Length: 247
Image 1 (cartoon, rainbow, N blue to C red):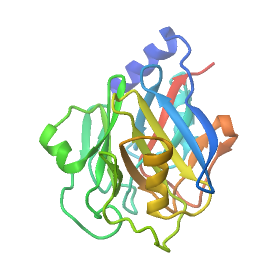
Image 2 (tube, rainbow, N blue to C red):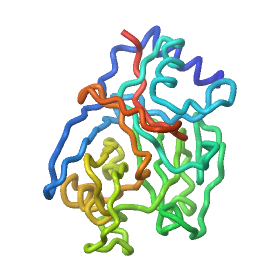
Image 3 (spheres, rainbow, N blue to C red):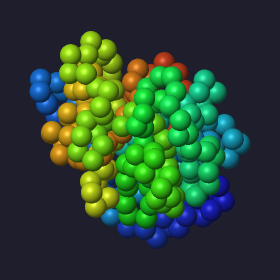
């Protein structure tokens, strides 16, 4: 926490203005989605869970207020992976280089355990969605990381368990990354969709070869461009967002 506070102070004092993530509403195959693109070379994308008292932030507004005390502000933000009732992450969670929860490689119940699942790994000036077993083999040094599941797209292919005629529809959100790690593309459906439809958004419309499901019913978005700041009905676990100096 001390290291992050020092970095935040330096950003606030000396950094030039940082571009905000670009958010838009987009239609694909008859469905509307809110899509936010983060340029990893120009923006400071971070993952957050606990405050200095080990209390989950829970809400975008709470995190924004905490950043404000450091001379920073929260731009785009979204829920960032699955969590237990007490807000503990279900799978791997790394924040500012510190591993808070270890990786889970086994199959299990629910969407998280619908293998293959994956990990969003943030490193200096890049973001990568990596399938979990590949992540174990490659062991990248992530500054921030969150595990969720299932994968939506794996090396250009939809998850093998997705059914085109599925009737399971929910509001869903996820993240995909470009091959060079320079773009992190977040999306949330504006109406309930199936996994198959959501995976096709990333593969066929956004043209991203690797994408990860973040969650369903609890999905929320903060997008100043769209004048959107979802509150929801309960506190979130991990939150991912762009941090920039306060004006």
